[in-house]
Image (cartoon, rainbow, N blue to C red):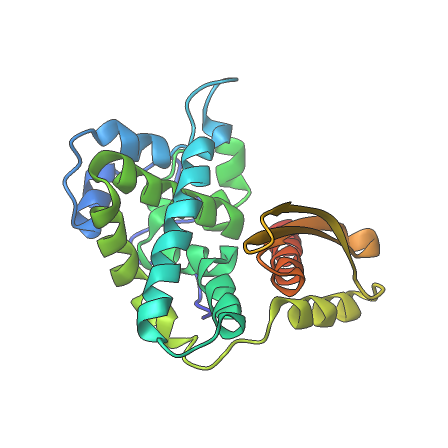
Length: 241
């Protein structure tokens, strides 16, 4: 799912954030604690050292998003094996998809950013938008629990679900193609840890890709952990662009 940046009603270099109350209407949710939404829209660049920003909320929102999307995939694809579900999940929760949803909401209009970040186009940066989108999901969860966040995600990601009707190419293939285009060597995957029981193991895998970097992923099998590591390194490469 690739969209052009939205310019409707906004400017990439607008100096101040729009009223978040307008965003709450788009979310179709009334916050008992509006400060949660305000914090979700506050980038680290806009706060003093150790001031409140959205980074911790992003951490929570990422997990809520993954849970809701995984549950929805089980419903939409009741006969699909795990190996077909993982690439679908990875595509729906990846940074680019989150940023595309944020652009649909014109989320950049509402972000609190430092002037220097605004001048560098921060209101339309994929990484900033994706992180803020996850933080907004966390705000919904923290204020109202799982149901409001689930309702928002299923509505906002509706078009994105159409893109995974066919199984997306897996993250390992995409990473290898990306590295080839960059002139980098083939990635190397190494199991660096294993936890859990024999019946429910959790594998920890690192992928090394020369100058492209290193990333780590976990999964219930070595294959799934390798896919997760590849997806993480792809996200890192996208963030550097």
